Image 1 (tube, rainbow, N blue to C red):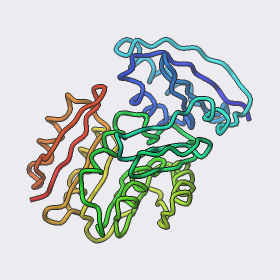
Image 2: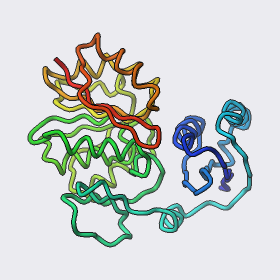
Image 3: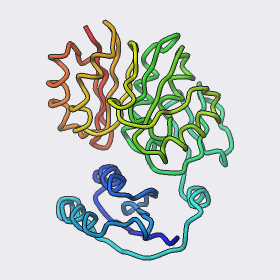
Length: 275
């Protein structure tokens, strides 16, 4: 099965949102480049009409230029070895691929087989989520990772001493990769498949993590709030700094108070606490 390769040059602040949008229409692998992203889709499953519509919607605002090619089926692990760099979140955690050497000077280490772009920590959203996790006591807590991707935030919760970790994602590719990464890091839980409404997590969670996108966060905010006990924490990211007001306003009527906010490369992250 051949793959279509699209080399997309765009403004840096649009890379992650384009990856998310392309994943929704069937693209299954991505590589970030200095100019933008390389996106890959199976030729058999490619929907030209939806792709053209998506690109047209971002063409001007993201300053997109596009090059298309057909290539044989890709060895993604080999491609990642060429393009993946370890991640350092201050002295808190060192996130490396299994083909990288360990590095001293960090409180924690996460080892992953990076088979896709989501959640690898290179994005400013995941970096900030990891940093915020390091500021919250996880010891013995129940933690829920919504839209877990490669599972890095769930693994971080485990390393920080969480008593129980649940995680799920809507993409079966993420679930397979996430479970592999859980095994690499000694996390016994299995990642579920589906939306939060389909998975329907039961009970309360002292910490809920959600690094998705603005529209999903707004749609699911009431569910997150309902899963938190009094003084429980909700950590959010996946949206721009200009969207902070909308998220905070949606959270406030649900008894969620803004404790801290941060931004990196115009991407924002919030720590909210239930009253």
